[in-house]
Length: 295
Image (cartoon, rainbow, N blue to C red; front, top):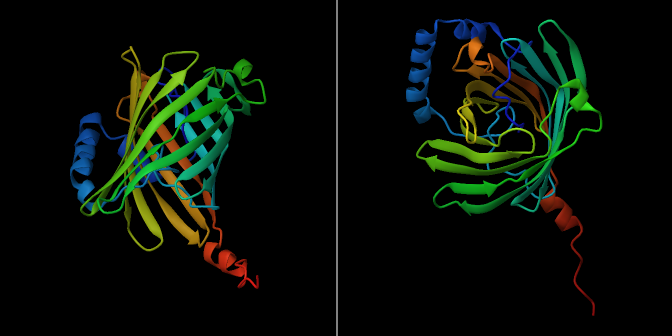
């Protein structure tokens, strides 16, 4: 769910938080950092990576030829004095062949701030094409290029103050590499933004299939302004729960490593559903296969 970073903004609250996460976030800073260091030390041997919703980091995976992947979620971004929700964020993906993915997403933004009225409008859409140009199964390595273009909202969001980035282009690379029992998922790219500085992004995602139906997720994500010192680093924990063959529940909660005065997110969250619509390749092809020619 790529968005131009808001690394100089202030923030707000989220209805998606849950009690354990809140207890972790209100720990004194030094204690919280010790727990995070332990997590980063012991997590990699236990997990394998997979990006995409509910995480901010993407991966080289595509839906497959003729298949659809539709994500409908609620997101939250809380900072010291303001809050922003995407309610909902609709993300539609279609597999064109085995190595290409077409994508379009658009949010409905709800933004509030201390001592200010709440504003709502459609946010800018994002359209993109993911191309997995390298897939080496022998070495368990995949790499993709995923250019995405921001599309102006059909409503006047600039007047509402919800978004003010102008033209936006995202140019990222995604890499997945299996290291023994671990699949490491890395995304590196650059937001080219008309209004405001360009931004570098780096995401590192991990996941573990805890049961046949539940995958646990973890993520580190960094945004940094080009030619400036402004940066934003967040971590997130979440999961994917398979409800039916074609339906998954997605959840993620996290925050930055910095306190409220930094202007960085004090809470980020995602909760939603993923709908997977698969084409019956083999059956359709066999049913439509022409019989022996009599010519």
